[in-house]
Amino acid sequence: MDTDRFDRRKFVKGVGAAGLVGLAGCTGGPESGGDGEETEMSTPSGDDSDSDTEDTETEGSMSSTTNIGMVYATGGLGDGSFNDQAQTGIQRAAEEFDIAFDESEPDSVSQFSTYQQQYAQETDPNYDLVSCIGFLQADSLSQTAPDYPDQDFMIVDSVVDADNVRSYTFKEHEGSYLVGQLAGLLSSQSFSAGESSTAGDSTNVGFVGGVESGLIRKFEAGFTAGVKSVNSNIDVQTTYTGSFSEPSAGREAATSMYSSGADIVYHAAGNTGIGVFQAAREEGRFAIGVDRDQSVTTDYADVILASMVKRVDTAVYNAAEATVNDEFEGGTATSLGLAEEGVANVYGTELGDQIPDDVKSEVESARQGIVDGDVSVPQDPSNV
Image 1: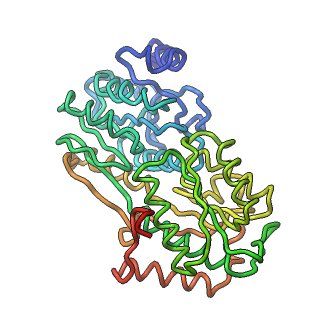
Image 2: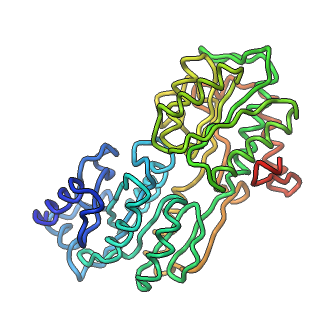
């Protein structure tokens, strides 16, 4: 291990992004389980070469190893959702290809430019690709990318028009339609599973978003449309907390909804969504997760009916694979929906088996209808 380099990385974390000079920070890597413990650059699993050789290949300017820098969304690793899904993609790529990667967890939007630039400027190692996770990075990347025309970037959840940026977006509204239909169908009947149940005397569901934006409104629009496809009279309560990293705000918003009669609350709020699950357990109601199967990645499988999985990991993996194979295409945009298996409705590990088969059949019919083009899903709540 290059001790001097590792010590500088520890220093990066201590001073924050504003104090970075010529080096991208490395925090919360795969070896640390997302808990913020500093790690040296990750290497592909199963590499049985000795550590001195690994360090030389990783650090040296003559290395053939592909180096990738990961700049995560605010909220950080350990969210059991968006960032963790992205990390799964780069970990898979590291296992299958000759890839090493470093990770950075900005605390605020203002730090995105700094981390993006640090990776682009670094020469030991030289980063072949910088992966920018989350739509909030778009403004920063729009300014950073032109300043580093020889650096390849990718971004998830937004389109940045630059020759050296490959953009990946998702049809979140399509997957959200399915979980909305699920919520509408279950709210329209008496349903119990585990320690939770629908109210029985109301048809009422909720949506909790993080930072309100065109992207998150796609989740809301699809969810609401799915609910209304079951019964136009079902009430859909909506709250935006303004943050992706405040579970207390998610808990407060969801508690208010459950108290107002909501049977099921769906969130698109990152780590804020953990508070939604807390409220569901406390109120004896249900919740729907997002981005990953959150019945697996959190401790709230007892209240999670399903999750709207978004394959951020696929986008990260594909960009890494293209970089390794020298097939990376900047200036392109890819959109992944139900047809491309970029989004999906995944039933919870504990409660999924208890959802009636006729409900699942209706949801599956809707999925096929969207794939076949027979069902059109709005992307803006004002069009529902």
